[in-house]
Length: 225
Image (cartoon, rainbow, N blue to C red; front, side):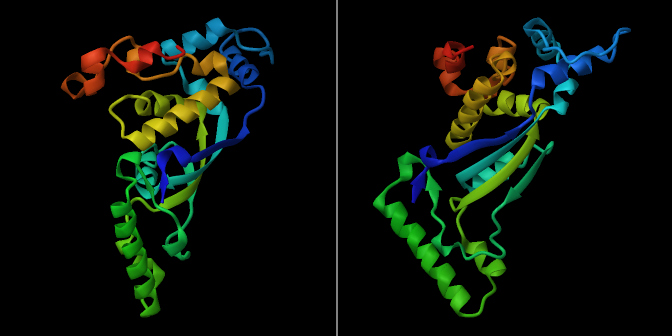
């Protein structure tokens, strides 16, 4: 059994010279010859704050995500403007895969329950049940590895939604890791990206606003931004 903090996230491929590509895309609307000079911070900030973010679709990233839960996989694929490949429960024996849980339920009792499910899964396969049918009893906590390819426009949208305090613990941790790695890669863009309380200066969740934000104000206000 593992906890969310043990997930691994690696940026394994990214577009080179993304600022130059953004400048080239922005120059297409000008009467002068497009250039491959670096986009200014002023231009990038304008594109993001004005929500003219289609230019960022030309910049792509690929991430290797390891040790997250199946419930996480269900959530991240809600972001449709991306490509996903994940480990298959159809063709693999999942009895040896760990489960990923919150530290709050990382207990001996939880471990016993999850091990009993693994035992029953193995027993079903021994009885001739196909893995693709036996997997129906596996918990959402089962670990999965994912290859995620996403352009920067979709990545901005992802971070805007998933850095919000309303998200579940595993997703918030993942989004924070992605944010920090993106800031190191392309700070001109990603220091401007966060939840609505950062990007707009206000929350749009209304009565569904996170409890911690209602009581203390968003923790993101004290973030690097």
